[in-house]
Image (cartoon, rainbow, N blue to C red; front, side, top):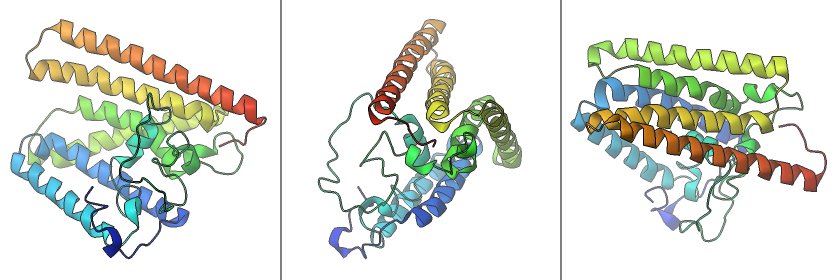
Length: 261
């Protein structure tokens, strides 16, 4: 909302694929900085959390004066954007976009609002080699993100003096995830169209698996709560993955041979 607030007062710059790639790298860096910082700062210091929320809000507003519509923040450097594209490969439901009733093509390629099912695949195309998707920014993110989530939940809340240790452990988990998945993709020649849904589903399941235990502990609930949330998560993620596979199969069958992503 803040990103779109300037409206006609914006300079109206559009987001080209080349600039979008640069912005994606910024969004990855911001995600890698802000999420681990929860462990030693934002989870334990409300004032710091408030300040960073205000800072991000002002950044979104400022970029709205430069770029057209969502090209400045939402589709450019928002740290949540890569996660949304990974999880949004097969939306369970599609709601109308109140912000963009008409499209100005502010983002030339990979806009989630314009084509949620294609937003991630449009940003992971690289030649026609089966495993080359891991060399694209979003492909590398998808391969590294499972380890990032696991490492985050394995690191406990601590103090600011242990910030370096937190970043080191989460970085190690992230790198290990990328190396393992990229290696398997190259050895087994796994295409992006097959790997990305599995990575999205796997990461989502890991998130809820650890998250259920975390919420149960924070609210002092018994193990029944954790078990229920985990069971529901498994069912929901399995349903999501099946929908994605079926949709992909139907698309490839109707369109004939598909280009390797």
